Every structure is written in structure tokens, then in C-alpha cells.
Amino acid sequence: MNILILSCGTRNKLVRYFREAGNGFERVVGTDCSAYAPALYETDRHYLVPRMTAPDYLDVILRICRDEKIDAVLPLQEDELYLIASHRTRFTAEGICPIVSSAEAVELCRDKYAFYRHLTAHGLPALPTFNSLEAFRQGCDAGQIGFPVFVKPVRGCGSMGIQKVERPELLEALCRCSGDELLIQAFAEGEEYGIDLYADIHSHKTVSVFLKKKLRMRAGETEKSVSVKDDALFDLAKRTADTLELSGPIDMDIFCVDGNYYISEVNPRFGGGYPHAYSCGVNFPKLIAANLAGRENADAVGAYEEGVCMLKYTDLMTLRIEDQLP
Image (tube, rainbow, N blue to C red; front, side):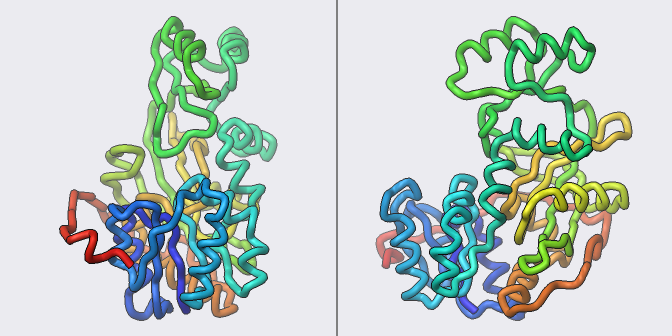
């Protein structure tokens, strides 16, 4: 089987995982709009493509799929998830499987306030969240929230625009001057957990859950973490996934405050901390390959070793870009 990884950027390790012998893929093809995306040069073949906002972007991607006899296309970038999901039939009509959740689930997860309302509507634990200064003030008066608070864009990603706010005057200034719609959320003083979850493409059931306690974050990604097991968290992750039409790799963030768990976000894509899961034997490329071969995956929730630490560090590659261009 051949897979096309879109906007591969700096996801070098992920490319290597799909290329590893025994994971079920013959060729891994990559795309990016920048020649300076290092993961391009670890694929079997790579293409420079227009930005995903270009009107001919999907035509270019489909042409690559035909030329390379691609069986599945895997989007990695936040904005690209909805683009591929909402044009799913253009791919399936040509026998290509988009490894992405439903367009409705992708859009819901991207809109953080809509997602908060989804959680509360399904009785799932979430930190008190408000989408306006007026609503926040009403929440303060009702004793639902107080300072400090956590402020972030409603449709943000990669930890861009996030800020801890401890004073009312700063919060008012942010709400007044920001060009983005902001969320005001209770600040979680506690531990943060990351979950790598796989929803079977055929059954949509959760078949794999890997849980890690985050020890340090950098630029929105987990830099240091340790694998843990917790039946209550496994159950919460599965119950949350069951409320959404998910497919393939999923990234979840959960906080523990005073012994209580709160769901923060669900990102329907490979998370930046997935290498920790893979190093512990949680092999999503193999699960994807099984699905593409028409097989449902067996339940393997929690099938990994706990107490294993992931410690990220900087690496690099050097090459002559002009020699690598197709």
C-alpha cells in the first residue's frame, strides 16, 4: 500500500514510522508548500505543492494520488483536516481513503467554545468556559470562575495566542484589542495528561489509548512526558470519543485538578507527542494499514508499558535543497 502524507513539515519521525518494515506500507509520499520542510526528504518521493488555500490545491493532490497510485491520504495540519474531510468523496470516488474524521467532528473540535458546549451537553467534565467578557462577569458573580483565568482564541492551534491572565484590567484589554474571538477559561492548577487514541476507520470504535503525564511543554508540544495507566482516564477518553464521529489517530488533552479530570481539547489528528506512544509499542501506522486492508482492529486499549519517559531533543539535517527538488 502507498500513503500520501500532506503538509509533512517537521514530522520526520512520523514519516519514518510509516516507512518502517512490517508496518504495511510499500511507499510513503510526502507533500509540503515549502522546500524547507525537512520531513519531505525522508519520504520515498516528495512534491512541492501550492498552499492549501489555492483554488487548484485539491486538483494537485488528486493528480499526485493518481500518479503515485496512492491508497490513503493523511492530513496533518489543522486547517487541512476540514478541507480533506469536506471533500472526502472526491478521494473515495477514486479508491483513495482519507484518514480523517468526519467534517462535522473536525469543525466541532476546531471551534473550542462549540466543543465546550458539546462536552457539557453530553455530561462530560470540562473547565468553566465563557466566550465573552459579559458572560465571564456573570460567571464570576455566580461563583463559577475567578482569577487567574486562561485566555485563548476560539479557533486557535499550536498554543498560539494563549495567555494566563491574573488581573481584570488585562483581561478587559485583551478582549477589547484582540482581533480574534477569545475564550475565557478557568485556569487549571494541576497535572496535564495527553492521550493518543485510535478510532478504527471501519467500526469507529476506540481500539487503542495511550496515556502520558506531561512533564514539560514547549511551543505547544509535549517535550517531556512519562507513560501512565489509569482506568478512569481510559474510560473518560473512550466516552468522549464515542460522542464524536472519529476516524484514525486522535490527540486529546486532559487536566487533573484536585483529583478531578477535565477534558480540555480533542484534536482529530496525530499529536506532536505521538512518538512517545510509538516508542512504547502503540503502532498507529500498523492499525491504519490493517484498516486499509479491510480489517477491523482488535481492542488494545492500555497495551503498553508504563513508567517510560519521553525526552525530546533537537536534531537537524543538512542537504542541498536544489538537488532534492523534483
